[in-house]
Length: 353
Image 1 (cartoon, rainbow, N blue to C red):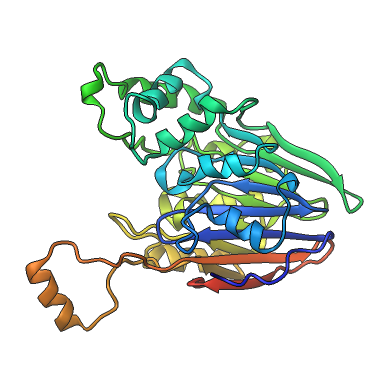
Image 2: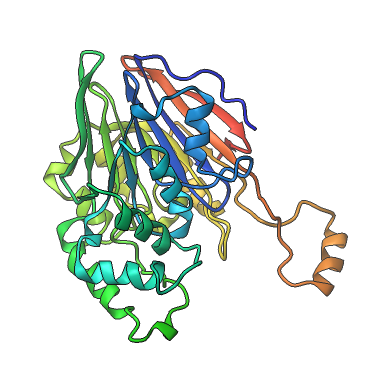
């Protein structure tokens, strides 16, 4: 178990990012014991949601979790989110407004409901929460996630995406993949590019942060539409950025850094090590050129750490030799609400980018 030390003081704001190499979760202290949780991944030590283990470790009471946001339905962002929602029954549960449709309901039911029991997929996680929980809210650009006063300042969490134009495109994708027969169901397909993800802007009252989710760049439906929107551009610039889409160029737009962020912000991100490796070496160079400092939650490769000759012998008799666990880590950004710079703490396998 990781020792996370003390929890934040009432007048400290905090962004803690968790990632095991395949997975992502965020816990945000907004001030005065008000917490926002975004997405979910599994802590290998507890086998449960990482953010729940973290909040328990630092002594946060369940009543202090105000909102849980599922930014999108991909497996690496919603593993354990149904259990997370059960741990915090009083928290409001929110997800992308593209799921507030008949097509999306049918999609979730087909790939995650009673027709496909036992599939450990994002569709199953979201379906179980939406089907069983009262008061689910749906987010789109300009929607308020949470707003209140803390430490004499107005705190506001807002959705920057999905943009309205992304709805029709996403619904068409859902309809395209709806199976005509139960026998056709295997697992939910990838819907690319990711246009339905919820990116969040957090205005702490005097400073701000941007949580980029896995939203990808597209002039009409993605980041291009976000940064060109006058309302989004008018949000206070952030000094901290959870980099979108595991640092991939497909989730980047130069105007994110120029329009939504302060010069040289503190950046953090999670890797993706299934199929292809993110961030790439080129991604790392690009991110470090725009940030004062940047941090990665865990190792970005599943390649075993062993002698090359030994690995080659194993690969002669085995296919796809890989680490079972490439490392679990957390990045904590914390500061008094009136301070300028974030104090950065690294836990587990987290490291500088």
